[in-house]
Length: 114
Length: 115
Image (cartoon, rainbow over all chains, first blue to last red; front, side, top):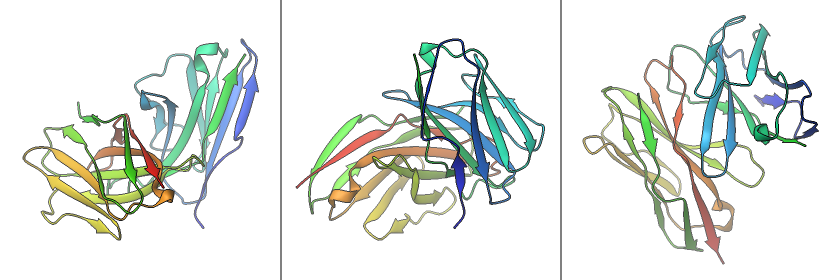
């Protein structure tokens, strides 16, 4: 069964901490994405990557960075967590070069910053 | 830039009835894909149905079907014989044919199913 796995389902961190959210896919997908999901705002794109060591800013990159050292792993980094980063974070992956198949999603990490 | 609009933040339907969720989008492209995703309380996003813009025939998957009106840029989802397990957030999404740009999502519609 193909999968996108997010390392934590729930996470509680303190303000100012450096936070790592990990995402691993086993489908050999080139593309990987990080979204945050907030009530009434839908899914907003933070960062995405089309290849190893490549990254592109999405709609709301401020306060975040990413790392993609291996094809299967895409990490989202909150350099100094703040309470306004409390949210649900969704990772997704897809093949490059065709839009036909949409995304495969992870099951999300609900992050609370206190 | 492409945008996707879901004008119904919440909807409800009686079990076994039919409900239609609305979605409109804006694009200057002529060839693209449209999707409906379901997010149940478990949070796992599941692909419900997909429509290719160059196909005039509306996509159907069991109890789920779409009404795709390309000229009107409308892509509604019809759920027939609603079941309790259909209760979820539903997101409409757009993607270019090449797939070299991210999916663009609507803000979602929360569907409740009443027993």
